[in-house]
Structures are given as structure tokens and as C-alpha cells.
Length: 140
Image 1 (cartoon, rainbow, N blue to C red):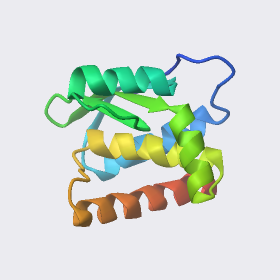
Image 2 (image 1 turned 60 degrees about the vertical axis):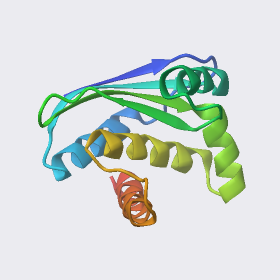
Image 3 (image 1 turned 120 degrees about the horizontal axis):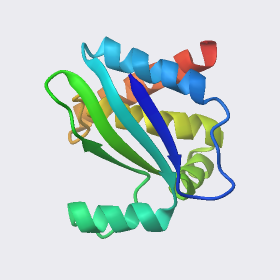
Image 4 (image 1 turned 90 degrees about the horizontal axis):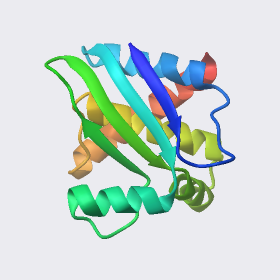
């Protein structure tokens, strides 16, 4: 598996990318998928808004956009994360930025593994899984 981390913003770097990559691998294995290449792109609101508008036709800000390039059961994709939006959501939900960032990354990987969040039931399942993997990320 190759997980590449890209930074499109200054003054932001992951401190625990090795542990994050380990949990990402676990998510993929738990979903019965094979590990391919996943690009995590940490950027700002303007870039994610631009992508959201250009590729999805959505005229609003979001914390994450996931592009799925899977080949059969092999997970491949790009995950764009707005650290601005993650920071704002962390304050809104009164959680540490680091936890919210991990939750959003796991959310994107779950999308790559075929999970969706269009219905209330799907959202509840994804939230449950995000929480489980977040707890796992802190337990080592």
C-alpha cells in the first residue's frame, strides 16, 4: 500500500502520519479491500471549494472531497481535506483539532471502501465506524 501525503498549505504538517497510515490500512483490510494508492491532500477552504464547484457542481464549502479510482477490490483515490474547515468544525463540536482531522481522514477512506452517508442510517453507520477507528488511532 502506498499512502502519500501532500501539503498545499504552509505551516501544517502531520505529526503522526505513521500511526494514521496504520489505521488507514486497517480500515481498508476491515472492508475486505486491497491496498492500492491513496493520496491525502491537506489544503485550505479555497482549494476544496474550487474542487467542489468544478467537479461536483456544489456551491459551498466542505471539509473533505474524495475521488474514488478503485480498481475492483483495490483501493485507490485522492482525499482532499480543508484544514480550515476541519479547524472550524473542531471548534463548533468542541473537540481537539487533531481528533477532528483524523475523523475526517477516516471518513474519506471509508468512502473509498464503498461506505456512503446519503441517508440517516448510512450517516449513523459511518459515524460509528469513524469513532471506532478514532479510538483505535489513540490506542496504538
